[in-house]
Length: 209
Image 1 (cartoon, rainbow, N blue to C red):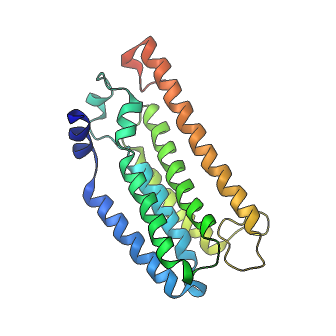
Image 2 (cartoon, rainbow, N blue to C red; image 1 turned 90 degrees about the vertical axis):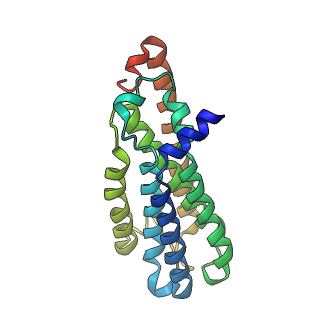
C-alpha cells in the first residue's frame, strides 16, 4: 500500500490535473449560461477529458520503470486516478447544471466517461508499445480535433457526436458513445493481456511487444 501511494504521488502531475479540473468547471459553467451559442465548447471539454486521461500514463522515467518488477497493469491502475477524477468532475458538474442543458443527462455523462476511458486506453496502449510519453502528444492532437468536430459537426446527420437540438438523433448519438466506451475497454483489456504475456516470456520485453 505504501509503495502504491509513493508511486501515485510521484507519477501524477497534480498541478496539471488541478488546472484541467478548473478549466473543465469554468468552461462547463459558461456553456450552461449560454448553451445555444457556446455548445461547441461542450465538445471541447470532452477533448480535454480524453487528452488529459491519456496524459496520465506518461512516464518520464520509462527507461528505468519499464524494466522494474512492477507490470504495466499495476502502474496503469495507479495512474488511473486522474482519469477517474476527471470523469467524476464531469459527472458532478453536469448534475449541478442539468437544468440549463438539454434534457439528456445520461448521454452527457456517457460522453465524459467514454472520453476518459478511451483516452486512457490509447495512452496505455502506446505505453505498452514502448513510447515513454505518448499522452501529451495525443492530447495535443485530440483536444483541438474534438473541438473542431464539435464546431464543424461534419456528417452530423449520420454521426451526431454532439447533438443539442430536439430534432437530432439522440439515440444514435448514445449508441455511438456506448460503442466508443466499449472500444476503450477492449483496447485496455487487450493491452494488459499482451503485456502480461510478454512479461511471462521475458520481463525485459514488457513494453516492447
